[in-house]
Image (cartoon, rainbow, N blue to C red; front, side, top):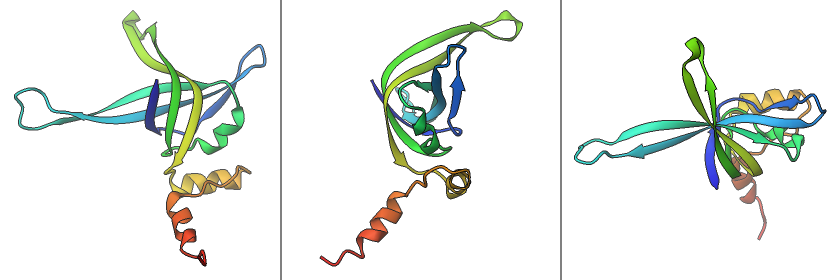
Length: 134
């Protein structure tokens, strides 16, 4: 299964008791539908919690606002909330992540200051293509 969405916050690396590390992040997927017989459509946002176990180095590129495409498998986590009421959350176990950019400049600059590699936006790459002499 593949999903494309925008990160809702910077990714977090969590170390488990057995010393394994996992990158946790959440994406928002905007969608639209028009109910049968309605004249106006409705927009909604689906939030999906994601985990990536293969390489923690990718966390430096997973900044709030970045558009990512993830592939893997989805599952539902069921738990009891406040007042012991049943709740459920969509979770996604990622096998691969493609970063498409789109992070806000302030978030990218903060990460660069912390020692992470800078992320070039597609606009910056397109602008540099104008300088090619052929």
